[in-house]
Image 1 (cartoon, rainbow over the protein chains, first blue to last red):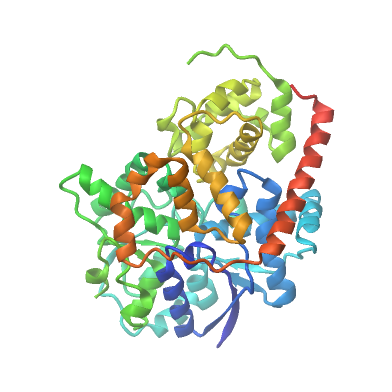
Image 2 (cartoon, rainbow over the protein chains, first blue to last red; image 1 turned 135 degrees about the vertical axis):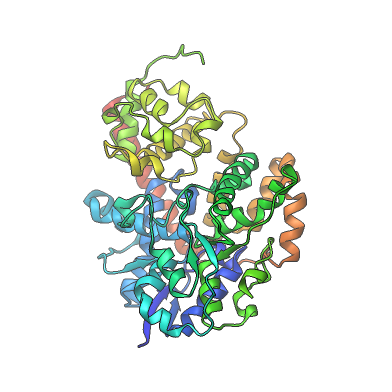
Length: 288
Length: 196
């Protein structure tokens, strides 16, 4: 059955992570989801707003939610970028928790938001909006037990008071999705550790350190690829391997694949639609 | 680290007024510090910051680079047994430090956050290419970070130089209203608690 979701791509999916945008949209089509992009969407405020102007950081995502609720009249929005997802969930949580905040936000946005929109991240879309059985039924080209490490990073699950994640320390929903497309998720230790996020622009040494630890553990636990659902995690885990290899001559690269690319491949979508050539560490071999 | 600073209880109150979090609930179990991905890269760490807020030792906080390394990963907030939203307190400290002009040398992330903020305020959306260009112009040493990665990303078609703007008029209106409401609240909180 066709289901319609509002769609908020966010700045990264229109910038350095075009393949995330393309692969997500391609899988949605194949899974009978209609995505309606929010007209004239604004930046969610990202990491900058909440450390410069707290009220604005809440108002920006709530403004988008109000558009979905009152202009588009839809009850769910897909927000595949984990950082945008976090800002959307936080905004909704803050106006629900505090009447004072809700009043300030109403003044900034110019109207109220009644909390009628479900915010779904990439994992939620496949796991809940589509459903595991429905997804498995549409798989035409399943993986043959490819061993993958599901990397959730920070904001898909934290803080749990906002995301309402079942188990923020050891989540399993993404693992269930990759299983439904024929992969074998490995148990590993760095599922929810931080990759350094935007420090990649200013403190590269720290990010190389954090990324190196995450990827080394994924490899030690037997993973052939790391699966991500966040554009910044993908850029860091993939891109920083160039520097890590310079410091460690024995470094063997490990592919870092968006969950939407993995699902798209299993749905039989073509490589070009999924942007499989856009990665710095080649992913085509594991996706073949 | 030397700790010859003057306690400032009114600043502790400002933290609470700004973000509605009570740092005095912290009993120094250090779970936040144990899970913090960046604690090892600076002199201060989350539990120490919480203690410094309780004691009004703001020089200690503002002279260290810790708050500017905080990635907002929310591990501290998730694990705090007292339910303190520590990551939000870090945000509030960044806001206070910036307003007071207390950003120490060697913290490029502070400038990057501002460039990022200005970018989405200007265009309605954050423009990655502009962000990196302005950062390199202001901080030429950062260019070497792009020598290897930049060309590779370009070749792979990872860099989209163009930007489709958001609704810039609506953005400017929201920013102006949010900033004026925040200023009004601050001057009220300052009147109650007394500036130091």
